[in-house]
Length: 163
Image 1: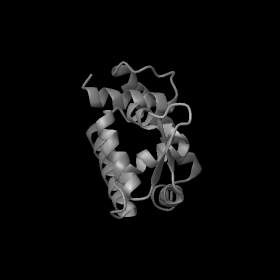
Image 2: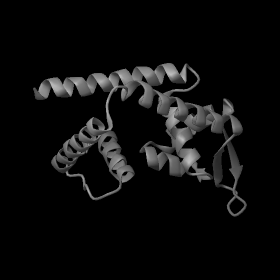
Image 3: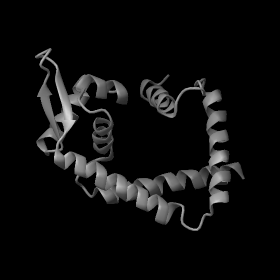
C-alpha cells in the first residue's frame, strides 16, 4: 500500500508540473517564475540575496536576472549608499506576471486539484501530510520547529549540496 500511495503522490507532482508548464506557456521557466515571486515578496533585494535563497552561485543568478531584465520583468537600480550594489525590483510587467500566475495557481488548486473534496477530507489530508513530512524531516535530520520557508530552504540546500 505504501508504494501505491507514494506512486500517487509522485503522479500528482508530475501532473502539477504539467500544469505549471502549460500555464507559463513558454513565457518563463518555472525557476524564473520562482525568482520573480521571490523579488515580489522581497522588494529591493539584491542578486546575492536571491542567489543565497535559491542556493545557486552568483554567476548562475547573474545569467537568470539578465534574462529576466532583457525580457522586461525586472529592473536593477544602483544603491545610493553603495554604487557597487544593485537592487532588483519587478517592473509592472513582472508584477502582472506574478499576479496572473498566482491567480491561475489558486484557480487550478480550487477548481481542479481539490474539486470534489469536502473540508473534512481536506483537513484529514492536511494532517496526514504534515505527519508524513515531519517523519521524513526527522529522518533527514531537519529541525521541524523552524518555519515552513526555513525548512524548505534547508531541504533545497541539502538537495543542492548533496549533504
